[in-house]
Image (cartoon, rainbow over all chains, first blue to last red; front, side, top):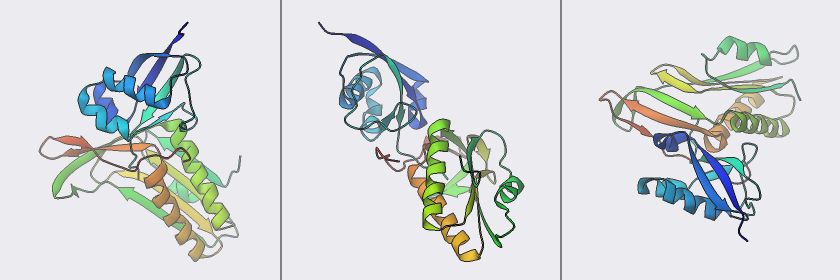
Length: 84
Length: 147
């Protein structure tokens, strides 16, 4: 049986143009790629390029490719940075 | 937590004097100070200001890590790094970095290391506002899994 989980993705940088966050529903075991694909459907097409080059965080670290969604959680999507 | 490193994201005006005071140390004869300020132009466009967005927790953590790396490269150095989050008009200070060391060479080199790494690794973003009313988020450096 498929377990569905809710994943909140907080927006940063250029994603702020779309609001504050996305509320996604993903299957348990979803990968970073799955999250990005679902976010791409959630957002307008103009964000596809930005999604592709952005990192995801659990607010403590940048998530590695090995990450999978195991519980409902909140993540952040971080576009390329330009501080200073 | 080492007290010779201070890093934070601020939503109030950055304080250069506070930076100098933080890194001042009796055996340190050099303080190098870097202040990033908003330019009135960028790639031929007249700029009126910049809005900075940040992930405060991660940004603070990464700035601290960068200072620790610098301390490993240039021993006996103290650090203060504060980055602004919010809107700043032209002339506003977006980042203040102070590094102290016994002699000037290490302070200069470490300070350059900090600002170069901040630009590449710290989760901060700029939305540039132009005099003609337009605005845009600037491109940047893609984050790696280890920042």
